[in-house]
Image (cartoon, rainbow, N blue to C red):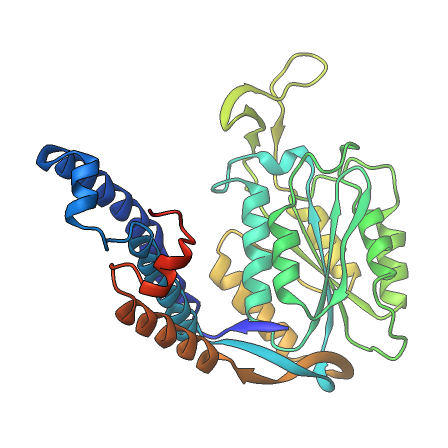
Length: 345
């Protein structure tokens, strides 16, 4: 496994295409200027030892030197050993509502983006907890199994959208039932489920029974509400432009509202808490406090250890290329001239 110690220095690599473009323009300018001075055959007789290839070779050495020195500043590190380490934490599953009602823009930029931001900020506050992600609308779909890879969790999170599930609705009961299958450690006492939704449940399932089954398995169910009680229409967009508003069978514009009563009831039955997600900072702080109060369960996780610096190899290569550039002259090398490798006669 490779780690980059100082990724910010990678921007220095942008110098390379700039130098290539300048070199090309310089060669074009030189040829035009030389044509004004004399014709090509006369120039070859006046400068018989001038190499057309050496200038390109020197540029290649300079560019390789810059690239190598940049990588030395970035300092790649290679994990040389895979170790099993002990970690303590809580198993947390995030069930994110991706139904069309989450496109309502009563909370900026819309409910779904707000939900994704909330989950991302909660993940940022975690240290060694394991997390999983579920997407649900008319049915629940596993996105990411229980893992300690927070980077992968954020990647899956950002790719979630309202088109990923064809079945529409808000099947909270299915989300809870699916979450129950995520906790594979029978000894894990602290199991937490966060349901992030606007609370509009249009499924025919029995949410109360699902919550009861979850609590019997030791799962605490927290709910996070996104949206506002006054509601908002659901914009239907194409290429970021609103084409129309979602309408019901009677042709009336659908107004979707945050149903805090449903979410509060689920949290009460699930031995959890209901959190209004409008203020991200306050919501995340409250959740962090709740998680810190829970007992941590020890578990094993594999990770790379003993990362070794590799900058010295790039530094040596960079200095070598720059020295080569200094010692390579624009004139033809005598023994290479005899071989005529670059067809310069």
